[in-house]
Structure formats: structure tokens, C-alpha cells
Amino acid sequence: MRIATWNVNSLKARQEAVERWLERAAPDILLIQETKLTDSDAPVMAFGMAGYQLVHHGEGRWNGVAIAARNGLSVSDVVTNFGDGPVRDSGPGGAGAEVTSEDDFNPFDEARMVAATVEGIRIVSLYAPNGRIVGSPFYAGKLAWYERLARWVSETGEARADLVVGGDFNIAPTDDDVWDAAAVHGGTHVSEPERAAFRALLDLGLTDGFRARRSETGRFTWWDYRAGMFHKNLGMRIDHLLLSASVAARLVDAEIDRQARKGPPIPSDHAPLLIDLDEPGRQLDVDWTGALARIAARTKPRRNAG
Image (cartoon, rainbow, N blue to C red; front, side, top):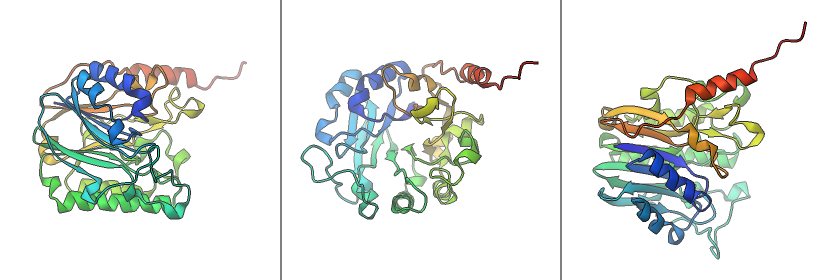
């Protein structure tokens, strides 16, 4: 079984790219973040034509999470927003809107979590708050959201079942997961309280699926659109697939598909992360070694002429 996660940064803008990638990578399950759609606008038919069932939890212009499962797989027990009730409506005509006032920020009123049981595995698709600025109410809200996530996993006993918790965590767990620890020091995504929140999930018995198979540095899932960050490989590994012990025991491979970050047309600023259970899935040419060699060659400091 192949399970993947991808922050697509708008399904409406990148539906075609997602369909191409489904054909390219052939995942059995795809966790999706930042769909930016209401549930009524979710492209259920388009996914069906591509061979997938779609479970969607959205609010409109912002956020939104989904799980796409290959047709024929059993899908049941859908839970949204930790089971804590409905979220705002930020779609056309909805009362919700982008939060501009720090005092009004409430991550529990946003579409950031959906879970479903697929073929006996509890699958959770997450889009964690960004945090914006360390010490701000947005940052405090992010940490509170992580506390709720850890409590949900712990209270429901999910960590002792077949469980995959994945998505855009907006946390780089260690300095090996950023291009330059000094450059990002003091910012969100890398602060010690955020990293402690990530470790708290691991302490519940979850395994970082990528790191369980890959120790290489310089492999990232997100690059800012600005200043050629992708072409310089100045990125972060902030998308993750965390696995319960029973699922981790089945892990045979993990990869980040860098090629999907290239487009065309305008790509998402994230690349898909995927894991294979039991046996390898369709082979992909992700070209990490070649890409990093080319980047190193063109960024090598030039010597001054004699």
C-alpha cells in the first residue's frame, strides 16, 4: 500500500496537477491539505473519474483537508475537527473571513483535521496552523491546536491502533530538516515549543515515517515561492507521515517527490511525501541526487581571477 500527503495550495488551482500526480505515483491513499473549498464544491466527481473516493472537510477560501482513497477500498468512520463540532464558513456568502486581528484567531474554528478508517487503517489528514510570529496569539493558537491533537490521539487510543497521522505540520522537527539552522533560528516552524509539540506526538508511540527510512539531509517538502528558493534548495521538511508501531513495522520505503514541485503550470509550494507499506509501489524518478549535485555546482563560490 502506498500512502502519500500533499499540501496542494488550492485544489481548484491544482486539480489537474493532482490528477497527473495520481497517475504518476499511483498512491492508494492521498492526504490533501489547503483545498480551499467548501464541502459542496469538493471535486468528488473528478476524483471518482480518476479512480478515487474523496472525503473532504472544508470551509471555503481558506484551509481545508481531504483524504482520497482508491476506489474499492473501504472507507468509514469519518471524523472532522477532532469531533468538536462544525467550523466556520469562509466561502462565498459565508459569515467567516480571513482572520486579520490576532485577538480573533481561533484554530478550532477552521477546517484543519479529517480522519477516516481506510482498509482498517485510521488515516488522519492535518493542516496545522502556521503560527506566523513566535509569541503572537497565532503562535499560541498553534501550540493549543497541537495540544488538542495530542489529546485526541491519546484519549481515543488511536496510537495503539493501525494509525497514520499525516499532512502539513508546519514544523521542521530538527535542524537537519531546514536548509540553514542559523538562518531560520528564532522563527516559527523551528522554535523549541513547536518541536516539543512534535516530539510529544512521537512520545505517544508514533514514528516519523520519512526518517525511519531516510537519513539524508537536504530533502525538503516545502520551499518559499520567492527568491528562487526551490532552485537553490532552500527549504524545510514540514510535511510528515507519522505511523503507529504496527504500521511502522510494515514500512519498506519513503520518498519526497521533488519533481512535483516543478509544475507546470504554477506548482504548489509543497512536494508530495509518500511511504510504501509491505512492498514498493510504482517506481518514481525523483532525481534528488542529480538535482542537489546541479544546485551545488551552480552555487559553488567562484575564485577571484589571478
